[in-house]
Length: 496
Ligand code: GLA
Image 1 (spheres, helix red, strand yellow):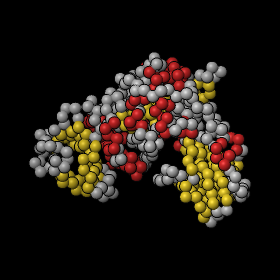
Image 2 (cartoon, protein in one colour; image 1 turned 90 degrees about the horizontal axis):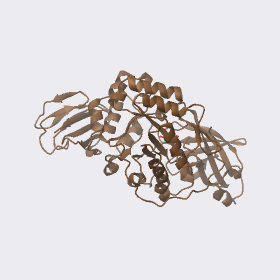
Image 3 (tube, helix red, strand yellow; image 1 turned 135 degrees about the horizontal axis):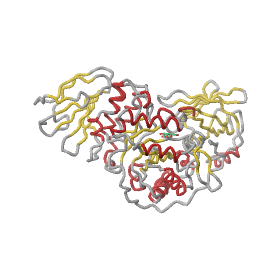
Image 4 (cartoon, helix red, strand yellow; image 1 turned 120 degrees about the horizontal axis):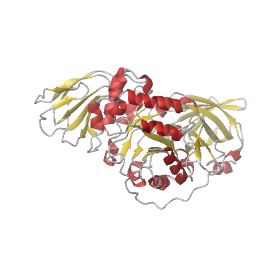
């Protein structure tokens, strides 16, 4: 089952630790608890000299980052790390209380204990292949559609839940609407046997049988791994076992692999990512089954959208993790313009999975989320509990006219056509010569809209225009479109 990695990345820092040793100098370990009760070890390697504090924060499942702007406030050490995470350390007897704040996420608190510095040796590197352009695998000609366990279930996913979700996918009509891939995210992994073959943990007694269950229902089977020694939730990754794991996945009937960078960041440099991911791309190409290859790797500077398709990937994340709130969803969705040129049949930008129906946004906001993802030609991977969906959730996820925009065979990602304060217009050209146009209101007030057809991206007066959420054709006024868009809402038009 889950293991804690005996040391990565820290040896170099420990060796430097010549500072006198007041209370915080040393190596500390805390246990953070994330989505669905996933426990993540977090190490703090600190060197304190008076009111000066240096060091690193290190998560075996996520890599390491130096302390920035470290200082003391009321006896507590306070610092940031590169991506804006804020830490406060408060000494409580022999322990440190660690408080982590990161943007809109709930504050995390954990107690840290001192650990031996010997817990910190980096994993061996594996030889990397010479970088080459892998041929396309011919899959994902339109953005993949399906369901993934992570957003709603985290670690609390098991065989029975996946079977029930698969049944709900079929019975609700979602499968018929195009949602095909049923993907088990992180936390399924167990131990390797004497031959190195990876087995699932006790939550998944028989993955081959589960794959068969999905296939019998006309669905496809998705699984998760990492090029690191550990996955992001601290389970076994495929590091050095890519060939063997790809064959094992094929034996189980896997049709889709999400491959999450995670602890590989401890071993490989930014410029080695392509070669590391290519190892799995090559292994999948040889495994004997067509497998959609999805990279989950969005570290600033890695530019996965440029090299991802050449390493065999069909999609790649362009953001850090989405969470179920308006602020984060809209920050991610409206930031995707810059990647548009990388999308096309067989290779897609992935702004992360859908949160529609998870409860943190209003139905209006979920329609905006879904509309934006469709205009972006994003993978539509539902992340909610399909066994108990409201009518509004189901009708959002199964709006056929919006899905047709996402799945349009031209495969062109929509881009921002106009921005005026909190009003944004995004356009997506479609194969039949028509275009889909989203008129978004990012403000918290309803706004009246009066936009010319030119402002909506049409080069001439359209002959016909349809409102895709209202499901009706509009009378085309020569002056343009007039209407009202509710707070955080959207109107999506299709016209030619
Ligand atoms: C990362 C990914 C998530 C999910 C978790 C699982 O955070 O970005 O989508 O796969 O790992 O640990």
